[in-house]
Amino acid sequence: MTTSDRTETAAAHPRFAEALRELGLDEVNGRIRRFPEATRTAAEAAAAIGCELSQICKSLIFAADGVPVLVLMDGASRVDLGLVREALGAQNVTRADARAVRETTGYAIGGVPPFGHLTRTRVLADRGLLEHDVVWAAAGNPHAVFPMDPETLVAHAGGTVVDVRERTA
Image (cartoon, rainbow, N blue to C red; front, side, top):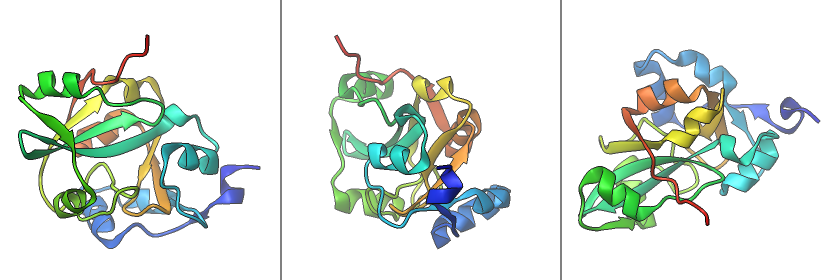
C-alpha cells in the first residue's frame, strides 16, 4: 500500500497555512497528508506514512531557564537535556507542559509544526535530521503532516544545527 492509499490531501491548520504563505511555501499545502486517526506519536506517524521512524521530525518545546525553546528531533531519538543545556548555556532545561506548548506555539502537543508559531522562540535542530533526503513534520494538528527536505525545514524554522540526541550505550 502506498502513502496515498492511506492518506488524503488536506489543508494545513489555518495558522500554519498562513506561515506557509508568508514564507512563500504555498506548494507545501498540496503535499500535506491527513490521517483518519490522530498520529500523536512519531511511531504512529511513521507507520501511517510508510517511512522510517527517524524521518519523522518531532517539534518539542522545552523551557530553558524558564524561556521556551523548540527542539527539532528525529522520531527515533530522544533529546539529551544536558546537551540542550550546554547548547543554550542554560542552568535548567525541562519539558514544557501542554499549556506552555499551546501558549508558545498556538498548537497542541502532537500537532506542533516546526515553524508558524504564535511566538518566536530559539530553535535547535538535531544534526540527525540532516541524514535524510526528506523528513515529515506536523502541519498544525495531530492528523496532518508534510514532507520537506531537512535543510529547508531547519532554515525556515530559524534553527541552529546542534548535537542534542541522547546517545545509547
